[in-house]
Structures are given as structure tokens and as C-alpha cells.
Image 1 (cartoon, rainbow, N blue to C red):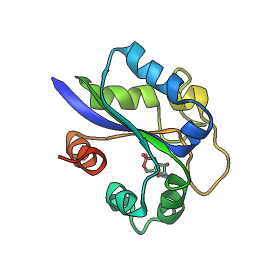
Image 2: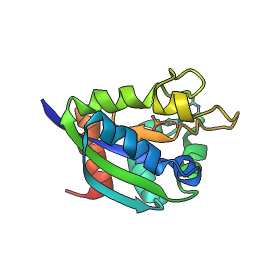
Image 3: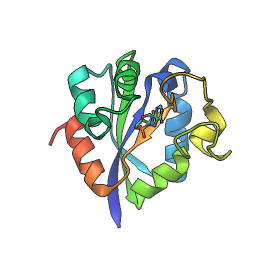
Length: 138
Ligand code: CMP
């Protein structure tokens, strides 16, 4: 069925000039981009977005990394787009992500405290609703 999902191009993706490449892969796959904006996120927005990771060892470095520069936030729409975008993105660790995916083709493990893995995509319909509210409002 038709779904919506929240996607972020993280600061590493913007700094490496991969925004066009990443949006191109999304559009070539056939998903509709229905919302799109660039912003440097505040700590407040990231504390909401990453609430489930609070207390984990990578939480504070993750928030600092995500505040380090502009990100691109988008809402995608399409049949099974939540699973579909995660499939396009590849697994969390760029070293392990399959070639053909965004992380597998474009990402690397830089040996830092946080996986700088270029993109975020909502992992369920509940997360998608919550995250679209955080980044784009009701
Ligand atoms: P994402 O799935 O967008 O949301 C959680 C993020 O935390 C994840 O992407 C990675 O950037 C980062 N992350 C997840 N697990 C680890 C880990 N074990 N070590 C470092 N960073 C992680």
C-alpha cells in the first residue's frame, strides 16, 4: 500500500556533494519526493529524532555529528517505500552494506565514534509518522 517515509541526507552526504546522487537514486527507483528542505538541525530536534538511542555510547557523538552542518530532510511516497528506501540505503555499516546500495557504493567506515553512513530512513510506519512530525510538523 502507499506509504510515506522520512529520509535524511546526513551532514557527511551534504559535505561530500552526494545530495543529487542520493535523490537521483530515489527518483530513479520511482518514489515521489513530496517534501524537501535543507537545514542545520538543532539539538532539540535531534533529541526527539534519536530519543530511542538516548544513553547509548554513540548517542552524544551522533547528536554532535548531526549538528555539524546542514542536512537534507525529505518525505518520500510510494508503495512499500519504508522497506524500499531501507533496501536502497543498505545496512547501517557502510563496510558491510551491499554494493548497489547508497551506503555500499558511496559510504565508507572512517573509524570514527559514529557510523557516518550518509542517510537515514524511517524503520517502520510508526517511526515514519513520528519522524515526519518532528521534521515537517503535522
Ligand atoms: P540511523 O539508523 O540513522 O540512526 C542511528 C544512528 O546511529 C545510525 O544511523 C548510525 O549513524 C549510528 N549508529 C548506530 N549504531 C552505531 C554504533 N554501534 N556505533 C556508532 N554509531 C552507530
